[in-house]
Length: 275
Image (tube, rainbow, N blue to C red; front, side, top):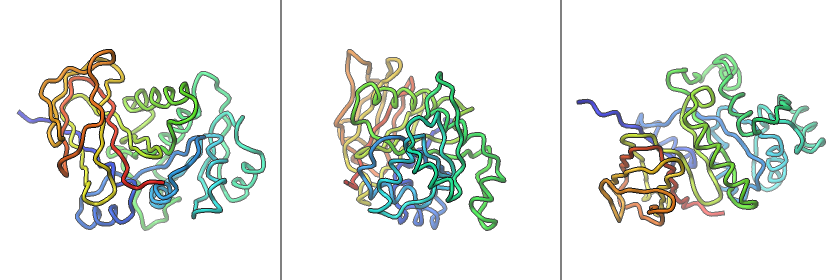
């Protein structure tokens, strides 16, 4: 019996050095786009690393303000697009990036969020557009491989906005019309993604000083049974649900962590790169 394994490489997105090592070993993740939400960018070290190799950059409305805010402190990029209902982006910021070549995409739909609008835009990009952005020497991702999306945003501030971001991450990660590859939410101190049903293999190079040891497995949707390997407190067929037991503050003890789950669950891993 062939067991399908879903692989995750969170460290790939937060270190140029790690990406180059992975490429040399033919062990890289997918090409990725960067989505910047309208949240303060507090971990500028991580932002610089993530943005350096992004194949396409889109700001979710006021995310353009956040990008412009830090441009005097760290090297930043010109976004390929600013997308949303455009009720938050400052006029001078929008005009500046438009002069620099950014595409301005206004979508007034009030039944979808700027997060979703940006994912829709990224998923609609034809291969030719990605090739034009990269130059002829680099190949765009195939539709079979997909384009991963790294989302820069925080879970601080208003609680309803934090829950909204987690909801959108959970919903979008299973919608192939929105995301053709993997979807990662990168906050000030963590990387968050949604594990699929079945066996998940997570590459966790804690010895590289990129990831911290603390992890969590959160049953955001339905109750689940999980089995883990590579954590300090491994479990077998362990029932987890809100209102019951939830695995938080566990510790990575291996370069590879495996988690088998009966339902989709949220996985969080600590960043070693601090603000």
